[in-house]
Amino acid sequence: MPKRFSLQTLTVVLAVLSAPAVLAQDAAPGRTVASLLDYARQNNPEYASMRHEADAAGERVTPAGALPDPKLRVELMDITRMGEQSPTLSPSRAGSTKYTITQELPWYGKRDLKREIAELDADGAQGRYRGTWSEIAARLKTSHAQLYVLHRNEQLTREILDLMVRLEQIAQARYAGGLAMQQDIVRAQVEQTAMRNDLIMLENEGNMLRARINMLLSRPANAPLATPEALRPLPTPAKLDYAALEDRVRGRNPRLFADDAAIKSAEKKRELAYKERYPDFMLGVTPVQYSNSVKEWQLMVEFNIPLQQSTRRAMERESESMLSAARARKDATANEVLSGLAENVSGIEAARRTEMLATTSLLPQAELTFNSALAAYENGKVDFATLLEAQQQIRKARLNQIKAQGEAQIRLAEIEKLLGEDL
Image 1 (cartoon, rainbow, N blue to C red):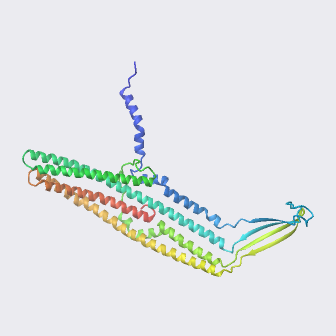
Image 2 (image 1 turned 90 degrees about the vertical axis):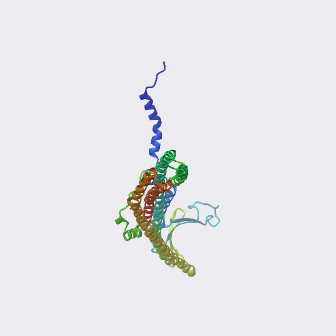
Image 3 (image 1 turned 180 degrees about the vertical axis):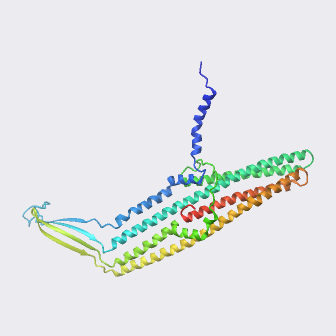
């Protein structure tokens, strides 16, 4: 007789089979902003590219300040010994053999300047690397907030849809008793259809947002994401003081940091351009071999003659212009960054006040109005249009509340992008 599975055994088997799906759902990022940032930090290709570029820039510092490799030149002189023998490549049989070792020596200070320029360029690459991460993090924070707002909006729409179904039932009951018109039922059904259409649009917006987030995470566009659980808590008003934030932005903004490094690098390049007025040297020593022994030593010094003054003056003017351009670029960046900071600080305060107004005033008033309208409709004292208007006021108040929460998070993400760090 075949064995039968007990209920307990069947439960265990089903649990084992469903475990991978449960684990996959739990492992999907998206419940919190931190989970998205951790995943992007490990997998975003743009961030990885900038990290490798910054590492490469750091490795250029050592070669930039190093001396060129010395050179060895071997010269076989009189390889036929005045025609007395066949040509030879043996140093001991040639008339003489010169072994010349030379070393290029730049003018004093040029190597140090080149090394400092490479260090400052590496600092600029680090600033761009940090700026790339700040941009990616801000986009993820914004998308997460938008997805949360969309999810809450969908929940609200479904709740209002259920409410409209109950209102339709009330209208049908009153119509059956001759207390309402059929138009009330039709109006309730039209509202339900409109809300179902809203749900379709929300679903489409959600798919686009998830595709955008997955792109930043370097995942397939349709890869599953966890439903956002909650938004991050907003900083206290004291932390959003504009004067304090301005000082932090000036000192920590990645773009300003990179521009500052570019200015210092341009200053060093200008110094190097002026040092090109002075010659570089080459020193050499030459032992001369006769037969099997070295019997002669020669010393050599060589330097370039800086006669092409017009060329050097053009290079100096170029370095001055590049320095002016770097300074102007930093001024433009500072204006843009500080303007964005002021805009987002004001925006987050407005969003906070809007949410408080919706929570403490608009929403309670709308709920009270709806309850009163519902009771009056059931008693035949108001028409169905008044009841629908009261319901729409509730939806509008709750949407304002949800949108204000999302707007505050978006503004916070922009401020943190400007700071280059979390508040």
